[in-house]
Image (cartoon, rainbow, N blue to C red):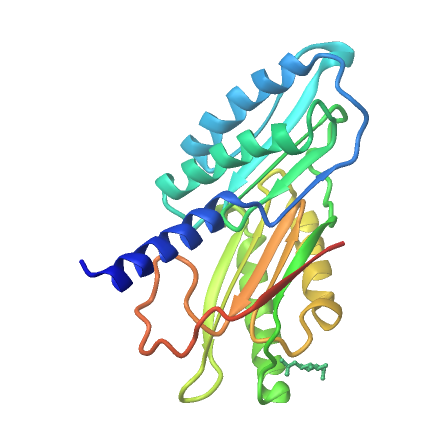
Length: 252
Ligand SMILES: *[C@@H]1O[C@H](CO)[C@@H](O)[C@H](O)[C@H]1NC(C)=O
């Protein structure tokens, strides 16, 4: 290997590692937890549970020391990707929110949260969003197709058999294909899942207006669309034109 190409490999390795280990967002809102060891014990249940089933909602401890935790991977990612994501989440949340209740951490492939208050089943739309700074060239056509696709995959996501996940694609033109994925946390009812997704999609004009790609990461649901394949199984790309581009993140 000559020098320039080994630099290139190092460069991509660095980007890849940085991307897989950095959360999109985190937040710590609560007071301190009296029994910090309970957080570790809870995480010891959350991590294997998520790897095994893609989702877990459980608790650790008793009475006022009880902590409730929820963790979930994106439904389309492999067990390996889920495993490394949720392990990073468990490690990093302890660093970012030392001994704090109401701690949350968002990645593209997974989400983890714990609190000393039971929060299961409640649609929670706090989180943040990331958008591609590039605009689409034909907003009218694009927004119509986007709305139709979001509608279709949201109605898939609320069906219990789909475990909160909906994904699909739609051709915008002969050359452009839209890819989208939505997912609710699996503790939500059909109705609450629908509400969370409707709020995220309803906020597109505020967060994602005419953007080529956008992600809404809420505590109870995830919404993403792109003009390139991003969900698994990955579709072969016909060209490299659909690069992921520059993203900006905003915590709400
Ligand atoms: C996208 O459109 C917005 C609103 O019209 C504009 O402010 C922004 O500069 C555009 N971004 C790019 C990268 O052209």
